[in-house]
Length: 151
Image (cartoon, rainbow, N blue to C red; front, side):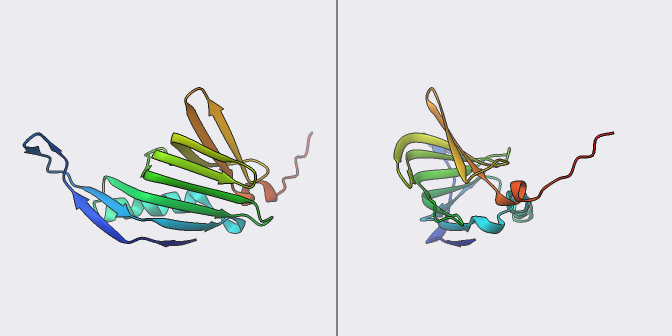
C-alpha cells in the first residue's frame, strides 16, 4: 500500500458563535494505492484503531480522496470523493461527489460505503434504493482451501 497527502489540518466546529472543544482532523488531498494481492483489511483496521487511540485522534476524515485498487488481473477500480470517513464498524464512508471508475463503467453518486469482505472475484457493487455499497474481496480469503472430513 502506498499513500500520500498534502497536509493534516485541525478544525474545531462552530455553531453560531460557539466553538466546540473537540477538534476534527482532516487529511487533505489523500491519494492511496492498494496492492490487492496480499491485502489483509483486518491488519489495516487494527493498525488504524491503535493509531487513533495512541494519538488521541477521535475524529479523522479525509478531503479530496482518490483510492486505486491494483488487482492481479489488471482490473481497474478507482474511487474518488470529496470526503471519506472511517466508521467504527471498519467500513469507509465516502460522501460529497463520489465517482467509482471500473473497467467498463463509471458511477457517480452522493455517497458510498466501502467494506472489505470474503468472496470470489475482485469486487462487487450493490445498489439498494438510494445507497451504493462496494465490497472489495481480499484474495487471502478465497485462495486458502479447506478440507472438510465428514464422519
